[in-house]
Length: 370
Ligand code: SF4
Image (cartoon, rainbow, N blue to C red):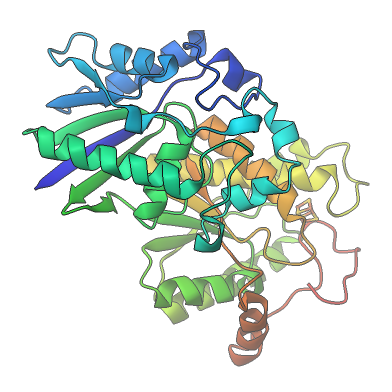
């Protein structure tokens, strides 16, 4: 039994717009933008002959499914296993507050040790994943047709991607993920990651680890923040050398330093980790996500937060914003913990890598070590 599954996250609601955690308890329909997102999905999926369409019974998913299937002779069926997670006390609370709770980073981590993490009175990740996989099994056994559309929610889409080894974080409204389901196993289709690298020292341990695990990825160098240009060339060439060493494709995007200067105008005197860095991260991540989308990559990751001089929360916030705007999945890449910093130091020596003494835009800020 082999099925081609298309898992969609519902369109936007007013609560999404206000940044409020919905879960199962906040059950409202789409707003105007959400309906437009569903219409766009209908266009994007128009050439796929769905033999069956299933949706979570929650209003925002049901309405999305109805819009996508308008004009098709396929009824929308509902399955409780596709419902959003029950987030307990977090439901109805602003995400900006939920993100300050100690449970939040553990909830977002794909590490198995956090699988039982949950919000008070809510479901944990094992419970959500188990019922979602059970739903897929029941649907795939019941349906004769190969192509099945499933309209669901962010936690379900994220956990199913994790089951397929695709460790995405943000799941934008209207995102669609393709999987092959066979003998209880889920495989992501077009599962190729684009890794944004800032330099050889920050990316070497990540590239080596991912290459040795056989992960499917390319490296992209988009760093118009680096000045002067000779320094940019030096870092680019060094990063390309590391990619060649591990047999990974290296892509260079444009050096549009003028645009970078325009976007960061007025922020010249901000310290490193200040407001200028947020703009800089956002600009680079957004451009790379747009490129990834155009070229058919399934997700973007980055090493922008690998250096201990960087504020990882700031990088993640910029990535989340860019992911929402481009509808491209962002994957957290571990570059600090689990021995990665030690491996980084070892490879810098082994490969004799050029290790710059400043981040990129402010040559006059001296750092003892990047
Ligand atoms: S310090 Fe680095 S991250 Fe911050 S703005 Fe400059 S180049 Fe960008």
